Length: 405
Image 1 (cartoon, rainbow, N blue to C red):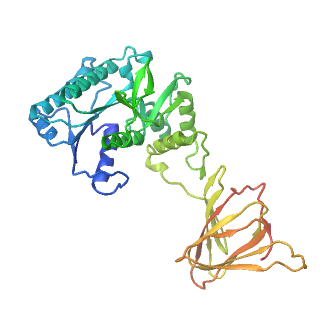
Image 2: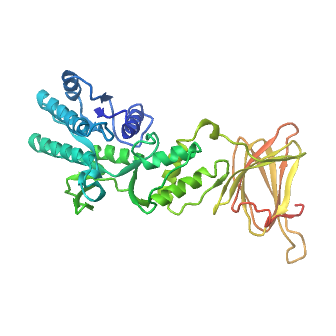
Image 3: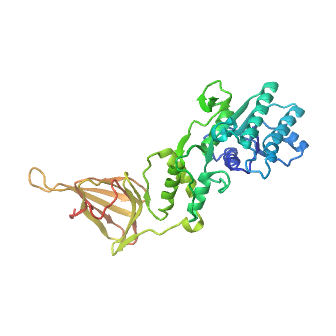
């Protein structure tokens, strides 16, 4: 399959092109799609160049558009005239192929978009496409996209999320005019996935619009992104501000709206400057080695790494409620555990021993109510152990009690 893309240098275009190139090169196998060539087309191409490209294209992703022109007349020039040249070229060469078109909810021309010149030009482009599809008996897939966010979006242009992320990542202020404004949002990866799957015929999520509202309809004229988020501007600003206020924290936040907040955090991180891409960890050291917390979570415990020097023993304690995973990733060690107290005959419980090797990683659980230790059996090499505990350590409530195994 040969794919032609207009607007390849734009926000959605960059994400689409990178995904298609990964598919073409066999790096992304999540799509059942064989791509022979990914071609791009810019608005300054000559008619013969356009004709040459569309003549060999099996599908066209039309993402080109103008939304911040100097003159209002440029809306039509950028959003309608170039499309008409592409459709004319298809007719000249006698070629029909599916077209995926990136439109906008501003084409509804309702509410705050009632007087949108951009929306007017997008609506005109939609009508041009539908006329073409009807006359040529071919398929067009028109996506009326709401606000799209994600990596590589240009800040201080037409995305409030990109602007907030860029400013806060770079320690600059943001301005929230009305925190109660509700935005409909879609994530760029979801947009790319839906567009590609629509062409493949796998997930054609069709819809129509009634009184400005999206109504799913298998026979609808439009396509839509199922994973949509309705979020107020205030919530967006507060969430990104929270991310920016914890640049050096190893605590991973809990999410009240997991899908959206994960996508928003990913977007924010894509704008971090170089000086915030790294930060030091707090290493606890003594003659036995070191212990370093890696990550903390609000509800899912913490991750740490423990380094034991040769012939050293660490641990020798137990917990009421805490339990852990020990995974030796380097060296040769022994993990011992013993249940606290004595059995019905008054004898200490037996010691359970687990010999561990870095070249054969395995999980050893340390159980609540069992005192345990970690012994480095090597005379020369460090023992490195990755640990996870179901509870993050709290100084005021350590739940850690010394007792030799």
